[in-house]
Length: 232
Image 1 (cartoon, rainbow, N blue to C red):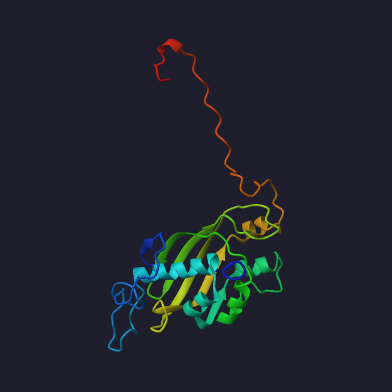
Image 2: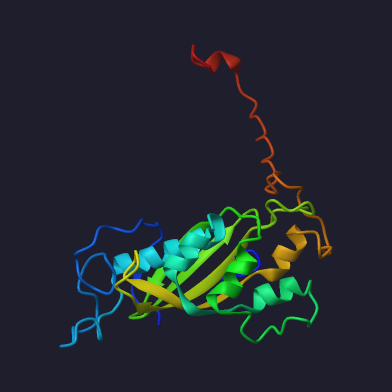
């Protein structure tokens, strides 16, 4: 998601990520439960995402950022996949209004997404929260090295974002569903500072330096050394 993903609330699922589980438990996907919806007479028409499906969707999003591959994109995204992200548009514009229009689809089609994402350095990624509804999964995430792999990396301000993945059933891929639409927003200002595009109005810690001030040593009380124990 560097250039692309940088990418209905339901019950809180978890903050951990789970790998796809074996087939055979019902629901849209190949993982557990009958979901929240009612099974229609025609099979999967009314079936909702299960908790495990939502975790798998969140893991798809993580892999698209951290461990992208064309094989994953072909397996997990619909051919007519679209990506809405004003944050990535403003980053590609380097803070300007154009050429990419910030309130329109940025990547229209799976191939457009693949062409952009496949050329980007991969970044560390942490999933913070996962929520889901019947056909959507919401992921709250962060990265502490948004400029990883860039020659202009100047800071590592944490970047936190929200992504909503709309999904459709698909019995023929690894997940039992595909991501059809991505809505993704995150702290683009921090991203631009970390990549050396924006100069902040203040100091930032160099990459790899903890910005938290070291605690000052406590003042030692005046006391009689003879009161110390033998191991002190």
